Image 1 (cartoon, rainbow, N blue to C red):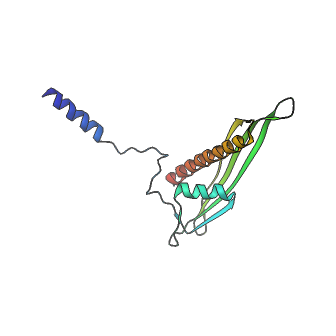
Image 2: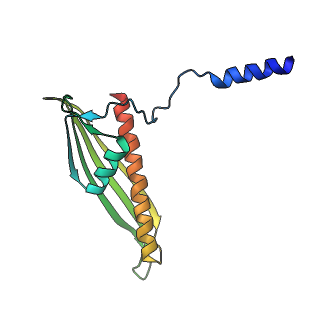
Length: 150
């Protein structure tokens, strides 16, 4: 009898929750419909952000979203022979949300990471693409946070 009570208590505790959701939680009910979405800069980054956020055009909405992005790969250090040892990839994004006349929110978002050079250039390019994708995901999470705070 005591074991059954313990099992019922644990079942109740694990099946009930307080409704807490993390602030970075991707919410399907998030308002992601805009009258117009204006994209400038790197097309691949813009498309992936739009895809990550599930943004849609809705002509009944009065809000306009503007994204300006750029992607930079910098050489951060070289060895004594002049060969690159480390790189730094940076994505800068300017997010602007406007109403019909007023700017509701403007944010400058940036994500970057440093990494070592690789001897095999194919592997380096493949790794740089993975880094770029991870940075885009990081920017997307920051935009979700901004949408949650609006």
